[in-house]
Amino acid sequence: MKLLLCHNHYQQKGGEDQVFAAESALLESRGHQVVRHTIHNDEVAGLPLLRLAIRTVWSSSSYRTLRELIRRERPDVVHFYNTFPLLSPSVYYAARAEGRPVVQSLHNYRLMCANASFFRSGRVCEDCLGKFLPLDGLIHRCYRGSRAATLAVTAMLVAHRLLRTWSKLVDIYLAGVTDFSREKFIKGGIPAAKLVLKPNFVFPDPGTGTGKGGYALFIGRLVHEKGVTVLLDAWRQVGGRMPLKIIGDGPMAGDVSKAAEGGGISWLGSKPLPEVQALLKDASFLVFPSIWYEALPRTIVDSFAVGTPVLASDIGAMSRLVADGRTGRRFRSGDANDLAEKALWMAGHPKELAAMRTAAREEYDLKYTAEGNYGFLMDAYQRAIREHPA
Image 1: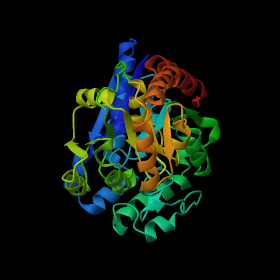
Image 2: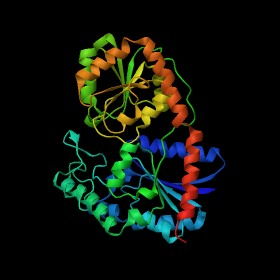
Image 3: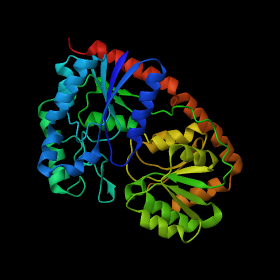
């Protein structure tokens, strides 16, 4: 099968970029011909605000480029990952004009929330969910704290709801999410009949670790919504009783650096994937303290793959992903005291932690292997071909 995979890369590399790379490599390893079409958000800096706003709603250049690429390559399916903001929804129309089936991956809530996260002013917010005209996002400047930038995103959402782009131009949605997120997508207007749940995966298989390092590990962007404030508050209580290593960078780097001066915390900055996997293998457990819903966090899947249990906040996707007492523990979202208590429990129960390591890897083998995900992808592509309008 010949496949055209399209992705708008983020300025700061994240889970969606990793999924794009992993699925591309997986498909090629199974003998498929993969054509990649990518664009990078670094280009945003050079665009005037008005031009960027127009391009977010409809990019004529992306439309022309994609039509030409499809004519030249003649793929069986066009699979989109992130299209925001530079590719824009115009690419769906380019694929339809050339008679190609369309698959769209969903890894966040962009199609129903201006900032894609259902998170505002330090708390979960669903004010725009299910509303045709999401004015709350505009009022609160939800995208990057800018009313002008939020207006561009809102205009994109409303215009393509009016055009019925999301329901008419996409044949299959592949949602790398949990049932929790699926419910949000459907309430937000994604046709349930077109929505297929497909877990994320790790490729190639990194193999299991031993947890010999005797430390807890955090991996992620250093931002408030990732629960960094809660994490640092909790470790003021935990201290050296369970050392914490932090991998990542972001706006809260200064807070993390200061906390590391007090002992018990080591800030490692950003690390390449092989080093991250090695540290994850040696960790006693992963700490995942996000205070927003998430979708299907790639970091948790990575942790299960190497057999490392997860201590996660009990909110959104995490409440469905981590089985309390089996593949890890859960704590009350935003509650530093409860996080500290659960972290010390895990540190003090090596026998139970060893059983969780086995269960975490079993969870990976059951749900998150490359082979299982390859079957999901093929089923989605074949279904998109069958259901694409003649």
